[in-house]
Amino acid sequence: MASSFDKYQKRKLISSYISVVISIALVLFLLGCLGLLVINSKKVADHFKEQVVMTIYLNDTAKEVEVNQLKKSLAMADYTKEAKYVSKEEAAELMKAETGEDFMDFVGYNPLKNSIDVYLKADFVTTEQLTEITESLSNKTFIEEIRYDNDLVELMNDNVKKISFWVLVVSGLFTLIAVLLINSSIRLAVYSKRFIIKTMQMVGATKSFIRRPFVWKSVQLGIIGAIVALIGMAVVLYYLDITFPELELLRNTVMIVALFVGVFLLGVIITWISTFIATQRFLNLKTDQLYY
Image (tube, rainbow, N blue to C red; front, side, top):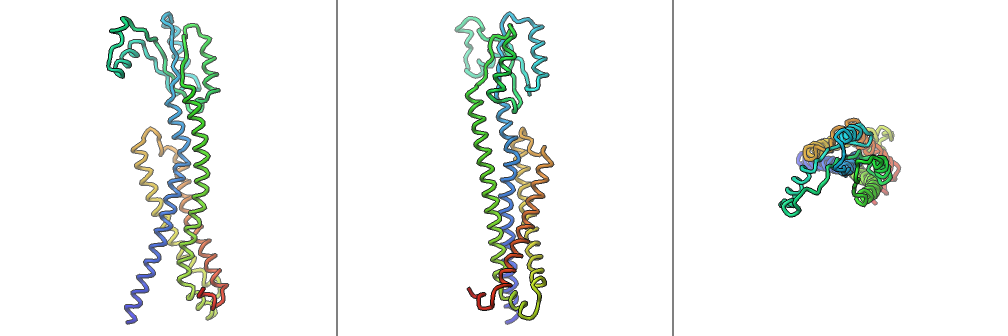
């Protein structure tokens, strides 16, 4: 009879530990994924900014020497990520591929212009920077026109600012929720052993002696939960990097390692503090207060 009861108590204890580990792992995993979003939010925003094209249309009278000089100066400019020369013939072929019709059959000639598509670095994709670049290039007589989607640039920058703000707000809120959830799980685990704590205290054990095994066990559970969360984060990061290789998510190694270490330490620190506070609370209660 006693043996079956002991087995039941052991299964109940193991079940309690597993539920605590799962709770810690899930909370830390979600928090870590949010951290990955925060770390890579600028990289994602920069990726979309660098898809904006500034097209420089050239006069038909432009000399080859002038065009080559312009291409070299653009390639060496601080604001240029990539500069691609597009001849009027290539532009006509691209338009034919997009529309499915050869417009030159109706027009009788090619009205398009030779051009250079300039893909800018993300830091220069602002209305002010684009205006400054346009003004610096407009003094060249062989450039007919410079075009870019200014409305798209303004909308993109406004949205990036809004998204960045709300990501930080959500991150702070989620961190608080994570602390509260882990704290609640640890407190429930300690609550189930409140009578053991009080019994040990009644037979003369000191508070630090009573706290030590509870704190150590909770820290162990925190470490296990953190490791499970880190494995989940690593899997998510791996598949995201395969799915979106152009974002180069694994390139920022220092920040990723710092995030993983931070998540691990957070799991350990929260469980240690929560267990310390919870055991201290029950140590300070009177025996008749344990039933409430």
